[in-house]
Length: 361
Ligand SMILES: Cc1ncc(COP(=O)(O)O)c(C=O)c1O
Image: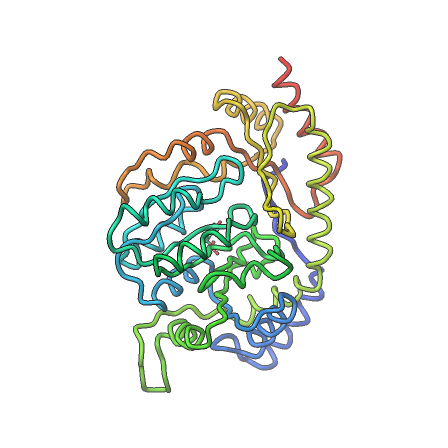
């Protein structure tokens, strides 16, 4: 069986060493030494000023929205994982969808501008760097400045991506990331918020710890967003392998592109000023029938690509249904092909042969 992804698992002895230390210390959670060490090492590796390690990428989004006190409408993309929209609704705000660019699959700044002009009470833009490929950051920033709204980037897929030579996490008021086991850098479950703003950092660190401002004091309405020593340990071990992981994904993606060069597929346009992390290997088929045929044929051979993202988030039962022509078209034709550290060249050959066979028949 070839699944769309498999978690990276480091040598067990390395993880077990940390587990033994945890046993000796008997300190399992609540801002433990490994959580602190991971935060420091991540900031060092990514060259960031502030980062807070959290339970997952969804809580990261919710804490980001809460920390900025956002109220009202938030412009967002219909082409993302459900957590992007659900976090907005969970925090009592209303998502306003702006359609995506057909080439990059990221939220289209022209569509954002239309919504900024047409709607009242917009307080923020929540945009996803889809598949780890940066949005049109400069244009989104200039719109946010002009209309005086905040920016949160859902950078769940972006570990290792650079934009203009810096970590893409540095852009916007807050960026959030997921360290879920399916991500190229993971802590089993986990996530983080990143900001350059010391005051926002202080607020988010209160929010992640129930709003505790002392043992018996609560200065904010908080939540439990803390992560554990065991999760931090997995992150510390995985971080040792991150350069290899990034390099391997680059090579595997390059090989896919070589063997699929004669296939009738479209590739996502990557941002010019981007150092990409090869988080996913998405391809677009010319029709939804062709997409379904390819899925059927791959499944018959125990290969499981993922329709990611599908369907459009405008179809969620708790939002106002809106027709988004580009997203609707793209979500019915996009497939993320298997990509993970232990995927082999032979397996990619096999996947590509099946795709070419379906298309040539
Ligand atoms: C774009 C996007 N945002 C948010 C999330 C949520 O992250 P987590 O699973 O860590 O809660 C995901 C998870 O896959 C995602 O892909």
